[in-house]
Length: 296
Image (cartoon, rainbow, N blue to C red; front, side):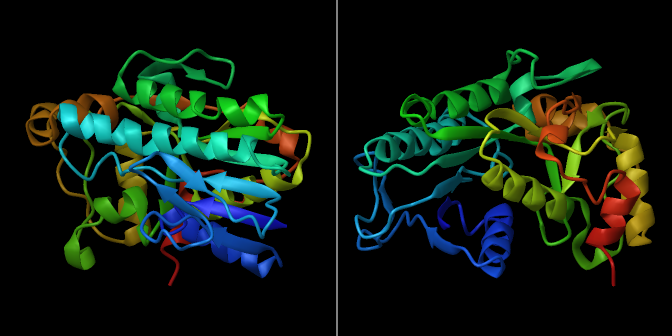
């Protein structure tokens, strides 16, 4: 297939690019800086330009500003939403206007869609939450409307924490020099839903190949763990001590609004739809996933 990836330089996009190329697909990147590129995004005019020389079979939309890069304020929150919703809306419109539209759009979202889930696990049928990260995910997903209305099969990938030693959350939890790992945050009881990068890539490959699958999908492993258990498992996998717990008050002082929305919130999420793809996750438990991440 001819496949376009947005956010191709990120952790997930880079791994997917490699996997698709090895499988014999032709992969294109959406440029945000080179107006001469065959596929590029003009952010000033909010237009995605698609090459007329290449008919796309599928598009994987992974672009979006990192929510943890900077402390949140009104301007940063607007950047986080706009980097996702505006590009996705422009992309969806451009795809809908193609003479020969692609048959598939995979568009990233996040389990933040459900807000703070402390009790029963949330699945794909559950409504959105009411905090900032839920708003981000809702706006992100709504921006695919033009593609859906054009008959393009659209899958909304609600990613949990994607685990990989070289990027994402794990990179921030291992101290410089690898001498220790970050301990639990607050009382450590809040839940964490995750998936290994390897499994996340295979889920996306299955979504590309399954022509009957559409709609939301929680991209998470079946095992949900507490933040305290996550810190202990990370310490074991890295064979390094975990630092003492960081009190919630200190987390809030350091990170502001992001603390309660992202770092101390419970993400108790499951998937009732992964089995529709007919694949078996390689890493169903956290120890297996972390062992794979840090294998020597």
